[in-house]
Length: 116
View 1: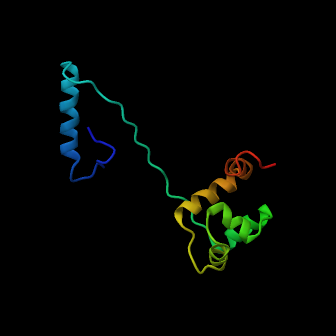
View 2: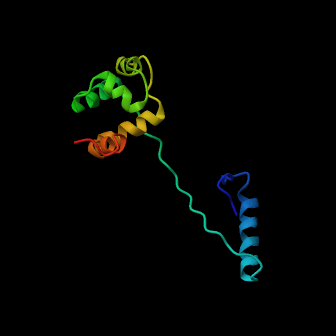
View 3: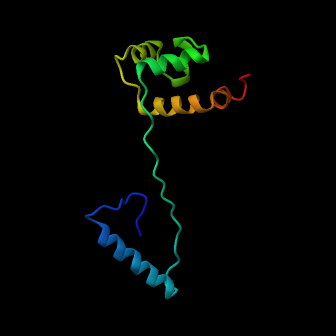
């Protein structure tokens, strides 16, 4: 059976299929117990343009300094994102996506439930 670290590819498909069939046979013969594994494909985070970042920050009424503190970066990093001098890292894009969808919940979570 494929483990979390074994990704099925064209090169290993037959080998993993054979392993899986062997484990199934061992289970039927009561020689082995099966384990359940769930695989989830997580979509890549959205990317954000410089104007989109600035628009989100402005809609929240936050300074670059406060906005930066949400992401654990400096105000100059946010300034560089908004000027298009640096691309926004994937983790920050993921958080921006969550802020866009439900800013109040995100602020409640990051402020320990003290946001109003």
